[in-house]
Length: 484
Image (cartoon, rainbow, N blue to C red):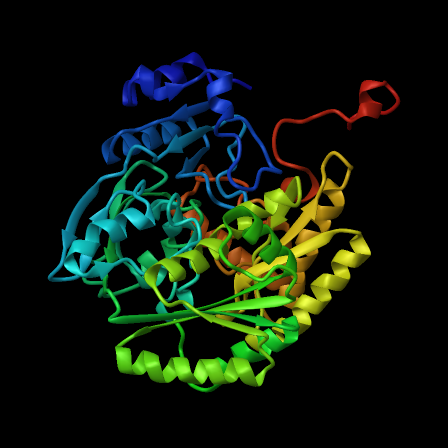
């Protein structure tokens, strides 16, 4: 059902006609995020130029009960930015100013369309940087990171987005503008900043963020180690942490992920090896040297077959280029794939990877693994071919892997969020009372359910149907069955 012309005119008045996209072809560019298996074309796409226009657009949505979905760079992998067919997408791509870099108090104030890497580039002349390091940091934006509470390769030591965001300017569902948190990070009363951060766009839209900056480490040491089995690599991770060493990052890749990454960027990985670890330490030079010697000894003790230590900034960059290219590179060995995201205790890494392999064999599908081993945050990539009719099997396997993580004492998501993809799995992790409490909090911020509807919390319709406009079954079109 198309929005009335009066509503369209209201949006054009709140912004301007050129910033309201109505053409089907233009709107189709916003039909999905990085989870391309789910697609819905929005009624309109709004392109506000500043926070005031974001608030004005949301006020029109509130007045006319139009559902809206905030969108950043569209790099999310859980369907969190999936549009609503009879709603609007509010793109924050034009809000991309770095408003302030304060080297004395070590913080920066930015708009939501700024990328992680741009924050670090602006802080670098002051000997500072922004620690959260998602693999897509060159393109993912801070607004989306706030929505998903993104992590990344260096979250083992430095934490997630929530550990680095001090204050946020937020547009609520009625169009009002509030500030959550403080510029120092200290506040009295309920932590509404913490409630909002990671809420996946279901409580409002962030329009300005104050982030914490850290001193650039004095020393950084990086190694790439090959192992004869995933189990041996997993044991290394447990022993490193058990020794009291807190690396900046510990990443693991399996055979398929290594093959894809090496073919794509030629990072110097060993093709065919069962598992590889990237271990990075940073901090004071003496501390790094001592910890690095221990890490090397642990790797060798567990049968490391190759140990490559980055001897320069260029070699370190090459190692990370392979890891960060892995998701996209898998497209070279499979036409289609689902990227899953779950967490298990570190001590169960070998067990869960074995179970995932068995599940893939049973489904007749390959699974590549590349993940943040230091904190047990898995990223299994389920490879399939839609042309061969494997989509449903792959989708089922992907969901089963997420639920396996819960079974083994972990969680459904480490950083990609629940979104559309895992909403129906939420009861596997949370009881009825927990879900009801989440719904009440959501209603307190958004009583009419306009902010990113259909995400995170399970609903009967989404758990039984693929989202989007209704598509008749072929038997219905042939007149054999009727829709009730």
